[in-house]
Amino acid sequence: MPKKFCVFVLWIVCAASGRAAETASPATAEPAAPRDLRQIAQRIEPDLVGKPERLRQYIYFFSRELGNDSRLCAFDVTANAGRGKQVTLQGFVEFPETRAALKVFLAILGFEVEDHLETLPAAGLGKQVFGLVKVSHSYSFDRPSGQRKQENDCLLGEPLLLLREQDGHFLAHSREGYLGYISSADVLRVDEAGFAKYLAGPRVLVTANQQVGNNLTIPAGVRLKWISTDGASVQAELPTGGTVKLPAASCRVCEAPEAKIDDIIATAQRLIGTPYFWGGRTSAGIDCSGLVQMGFASAGLHLPRDAYQQFYLGQLTATRWHTAGMRRGDTLYFLGADGKIRHTAIYLGDNHYLQAVVPRVRISSFNRKDSDYDADRHASFAFAKRLLD
Image 1: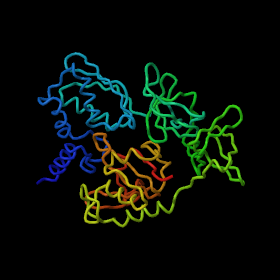
Image 2: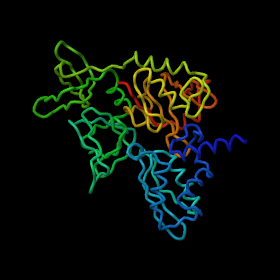
Image 3: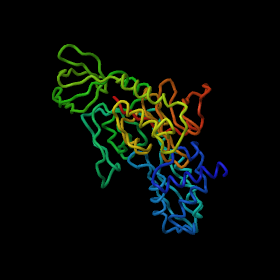
Image 4: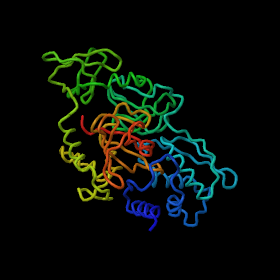
């Protein structure tokens, strides 16, 4: 049986079962294969004849079938019908893979697509696509104005990855990766250097509400930059540059749990050379999410089975456009050509990561100068998450 056909059959079986195939789609920024998308399009229009009056349903169907959770990956698209089968796309997506696959999907249904979508982060933000919450806490919402619902509560010092600005609000990824519109007035915008500087080093986790002076309440759960510990007090730095002294009894200084990270990586590295087997979790054969799952199990962390499920866990530390925040032991997530999360790996530090791929588990690199550089995987990198902090 031809290799390409085998890959295609595997992809379709995975889609039908509701699990994302982790190595079936090429990890590139090119559109998903038309024949793959054709199978999906036939589920909503068996004769592949698109109807302009159903454009809204097609966009929803695409988002549901091939989009990632819109609470974690930005997707806000409107399709407007023109003359005949002409359609104009407006709105935004987070990744070019999603944009390209949507255009192919609509073309399969017979539409002539005029693309006015924006790929985020918006160019207008310039270099300051990073933020820190500078007030006690700030709610984020599903839209910047009008009738809206609360999505998340972002706490003082929380890092934000900014995607766009509208009506006095930033669309941003919060600490967990959750998306929402947060008031621009509550955000200190910084460049990459300023962002890295504040997040570097140990953090102070506040475990009980603290009142600092008359104007600042520091809620329990806040994490600030640690400066020093002096007997019964801990000195921490606020995002705006000021410092506060907090009672040591109400704080916990958090550093990287190196011993657990060592255990995770050591367990996963013992599987180097193991044959890739979709659904496998042993040295007889293992897949990408199984490798991550088994590595973290050695540290007592029992993760969900699939890459797209594991992505919900932990703190967002990196995106395609900001990788400097990655730390050894972070989990990495990669997109398929259709824009859906389909692969995961463990970051080893120094640009290297461990992944289970065909034909077997190996170490790969993000560094183009390394002999183990994986260009396709590098191009498809989307996010990194931190499960241990």
